[in-house]
Structure formats: C-alpha cells, structure tokens
Image (cartoon, rainbow, N blue to C red; front, side, top):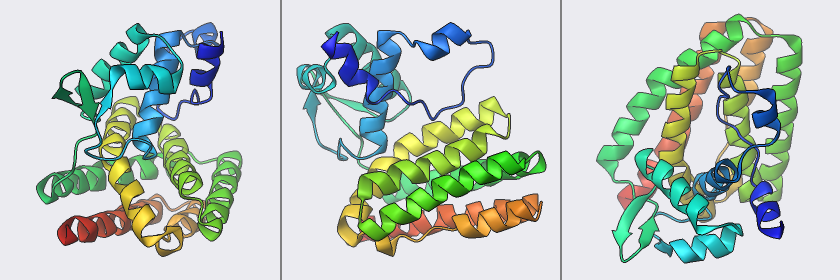
Amino acid sequence: MAARTKAQTHAQDFSTPMKDQSEATKANPPAHELTYRALRDMVLFGELAPGQPVTIQGLVASLGTGITPVREAIRRLTAEGALEAKGNRRIAVPVLDLGQLDQLSFARAQIEPHLAALATAQMTKGLIDQLTQIDTALNSAIQQGDIRGYLEHNHTFHSVLYDAADAQILAGMAAGLWLRVGPSLRVVCGRIGTQNLPDMHDAALHEMRAGNPAGVAAAIAADIAQGHEHIRADLSAQ
C-alpha cells in the first residue's frame, strides 16, 4: 500500500472532470489514474526537464507504483504530446522550438480567453473568493521564490476558472496545451526567478467583480502573452 500512497500525493486533478463519472470513481480513482496524474504533474511542474531522458524503471521507483500503470501513463501523455519516446526504453519531455511556441501561443490565445469569458458570464461570489484565495497563495509563492508553489497555484487559478466555463471540450484542449508549455515555463522560472514573472490575475479578478467577460478575457490573454514572451526570450538565447 505504500506504493499507492506515493502516487496519491500527486492525486489532485486540475483537469475538467467528466460529468458522467460516478462519485465513487471521483473519490477513489483507480491506480492507473493516480499514476497518470502523478506523472502529469511531474511534467507540468518541471520535475522532468525538457529533453531530460528517464527510464520506465526510474519512473516506477519515483512514483512508487507498478510498471503497468506507469506504461499506461506514459502512453496517455505521449498521445497528448507531453512526452516522447527516446529509444532504449527511455522517454523525455519534448524540447520546444520557436515554431512550436508560436503554435502554442496562437492556440492558447484563442481558447483560454474565451473560456475565461464564458466562466465570467456565470461567475459567483464564491468562485471569485476561491480564485482570490488561490491568487493570494500564488503571490506568496512569488515573494518567497517558491517556484513549485508558483507553478502549481498559477495552474490551479487558470484551471478553476476554465472549469467554471462548463465547456469540457475547450477546457480539455487548454489542459493539453498547458502540458506542452509547462516544462518550459519551469525552466524560465529557474533562470529569472519568480519575482520576474508577475501575472495579470489581479486585473482578471477586478474584471470578474465588475462582471465584465471581455475584460477578463483581455487580462487572461495578456497573462498568457507575458509568460510566452519570457519563454521566447529564453529559447532565442539558446
């Protein structure tokens, strides 16, 4: 049971839940799902650096789970473009190039601001309070230089907002885009520090309180563009 416990430390799911999923499955995800989430978080939050090869056996040891759930997690994440096979039973996070970043920038700029606007159109005070709390934790991580905390709270802010749009197809697409860009953002944070990565969440929250979907969409678009410019500068310098 110790192996399952290690995977459960990564078990929080920030993707949009399927509406027809049973409550029991949500509360007690199977081992393969827990392993997928754990490996996904390693990708999202930079525990696996772009280009860094790892072995299946190494992941089994790191995640404390069996080889079959790890293989299934790798299969899913490879299909989502978050991992790639390197041969000799090794896998790695892909290294972005500028052309790929351009595509990610375009896709995120189309999908995520629209999700934010949809969410704002049915925003509640409770959701605004929740997002405010997440952003407060994010700001604390910035001040403390806590890179992992910054990445996690930043991702949670966007995920909670997009989930509120009740647009599962678009939210799923956004989650896939985050998997592709997250590792590069982690590299940037490591090089320039969290305090050089301010966000536009305060502006988005202000527009939410005003009930302005277009204003929230603009703030989220600016937030995405800001992060991508840092990544672009880092890739251009390599």
